[in-house]
Structure formats: C-alpha cells, structure tokens
Length: 221
Image (cartoon, rainbow, N blue to C red; front, side):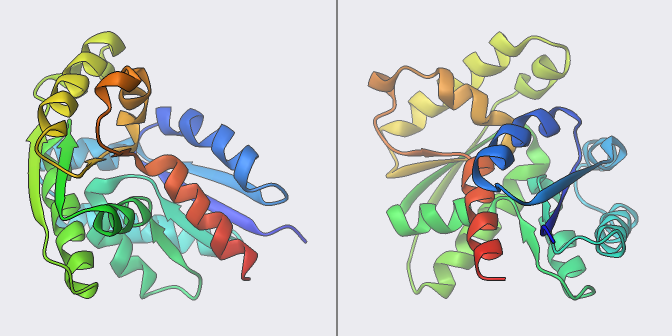
C-alpha cells in the first residue's frame, strides 16, 4: 500500500507550489492537501501565533493522522511552534517545512540572511535557525529583512511587485551574508526570477528542500 502524505497549508496557492514537487520527488506516495486560510488570517490579524490558532493547527494534524496519513508536513513557517506541539500528540512524524532549509543554512555559513514578506514569520524563522545552530555547536549571525507591501501585492494578484520587493532585499543582503533564507514557501518564485548574476550567495527556499526531506523520511519507513 502506498504511503500517505498530508500537506497542511494556510494558503490555497501552496497546493500548486507543492504539487509538481510531490509528483517529482514522492513517486508512489499518495498525497492529500488540507487548506485552512483562516489560520494565516488569524496570525496576520493578531501579529503572532496565539493559543486558539495553535489549537486549530494541532486539530488539523490530529485529523490528518486519523485520515490515514503516515507523515504530515505543515507548509506555513508562521506556525512552527504549533507544528512541534502537534508532533508530540500523534504517533506519526510531523515536519516543519522550514526546518530542512534552516538546517542547510546553518551548514553553509555563519552569516545568515532571512527575508520575509510577513512580520509574523521573521521571529519563528530566526529562532529556528539559532536553535539549530546551537544544537550544531555553531555561532551564527542572523540578519533579517521584511519586504513591506510584498505580501499584500501578491494577494492582490500583483506578483511582479512582490517579486521586485523580494529581489531588492536579496540583492541588499547578498553582499553581507554567506547564505539567504526565504522565510515563506510563497517566496520561492521570487528567487527563481532573480538573474543568476545577482545571486552571489546561495538562496534557500523551503518547498523543494522540504519535499526532499519528506522523500528521505519515506524511504526509511
């Protein structure tokens, strides 16, 4: 029987981002998606992850396990602490989409840039990087940048403005860091549009690294 993988999203657009990656990297697995856009709306409204929203994240993970999932990945970086809590309450692996990316950034360099389009994702991403660096016994310097107005632009359908704002932040940090992390899965498209000549340091995004990590975990099951 095929292994079942549940992807939990806080934006419907993420289904399209992850579908081709799963088809490429998770051949033979049955993937199903859970989308709850109210989670992200609550985080934006509150400015951070609060307990009621965290409980709903945990509820989605519990429901995915009950639906037969062998492994769950949550694709929103703003709710990482709730993902880790949910992992303690189920008997299947629960993965933060940004953890493989953060681990790779720590492996690559000690000067790490973090770019986000939502303020609520900056702190969780920076905290994750610093925690993983501590576990690795490595001292890192993290520089973060918020792309004001980029998220609002892409929600309004103006992808060009979103990509331009993200690209400007990437160019700014490129000369001051060893590696740059895109704090949200939705930002991967902006890195793809950046001319290679301007990508002077590695720019990491979570979708492919996250799904590659899932593939590795499934191979060991």
